[in-house]
Image (cartoon, rainbow, N blue to C red; front, side, top):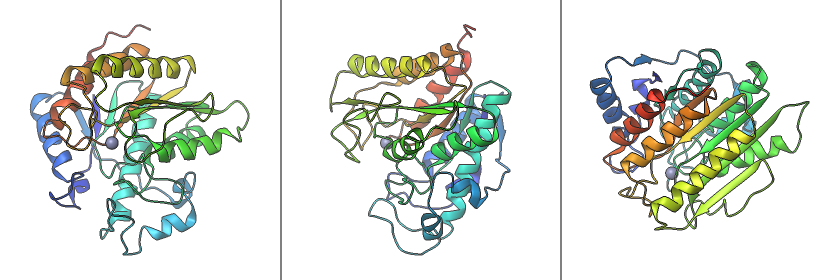
Length: 300
Ligand SMILES: [Zn+2]
C-alpha cells in the first residue's frame, strides 16, 4: 500500500468542526503503527492553475484566496488555497501511481473535494480533487476512460456536475463514468436519480438495512466495471458508518473491508482519495478498507 500524505494537511481547522485535523493525524498514527510495511510519500507536485482550470472556473480559483467564508460548513482559512492545492496534488500523484504501478494507493489528505463544484466551495470542500484528477488523467496520462466510484454517504454533487458537463461534450473515444451511492434525503440534496447512462446515482434512504445498502454499492461497482475504465478513482468517504455523527446510515466496520475486497477483485487500476468520515472509529474504517483492498488476491 502506498499512501500519499502531507502532515501539513492537518494545519487548518479546529476540533469544534466535524471535518477536523484529528481525522488525518489519528489515521496516520494508526496506520503507521499497524502497517509498518506500508510506504508513505509526501506529494511533491505543485499544481498549476491550468490543471485546476480543467474542473474549476478562474473566478473560483481566485476566490479561494479571498478571506470570506464560503458557507456555514466551509469557512475561509488562511492558506486554504495552499491546502486545497496540496490535496489536489496528492490526488494527481495517486492517479499516476495507479496507472503506472497498478497497485493500491490512497490519498490521506484534507480538505476533501467531492462537493466542490466548478465555481463553488461547499460541504468542507474547496477544490474537487477527484474531478481534477479524472480530467488530468485523461489529458496527461493516456487514460481515455475514467470512472469515479463514490461511496461517501453524501452525494458527490460537485464531481457529478463537473464530469457530467464533460460527458456531454466527449472528445474522441474518451469518456467519464460517475457512480455515487449515498443517503437520500440528506446533504446536499442532489443525487435522487441518474443524469444519464454514465452519470449514475443510487440513493439510499436513512436507516436502510446495511445489506440493502451493500447491494446498492455492489450494483454501483458492477456498473463501474461494465464501463471498462482505464482508471478507477474512488471517493472514499467513511460516513456511511452506523456510528457516524453526521448521517443515519448503517454500515459496519467489516462492510468497509468488503468494499476494499470488491475493489481489489475488479483488478482495475485504482486510486482512492479520502472524502468524509467523522466517527472516532475513522482510522479503523480506513484500515479495514485499505487492508482488504491490498490483501485481495488479484483475479486478473
Ligand atoms: Zn460525506
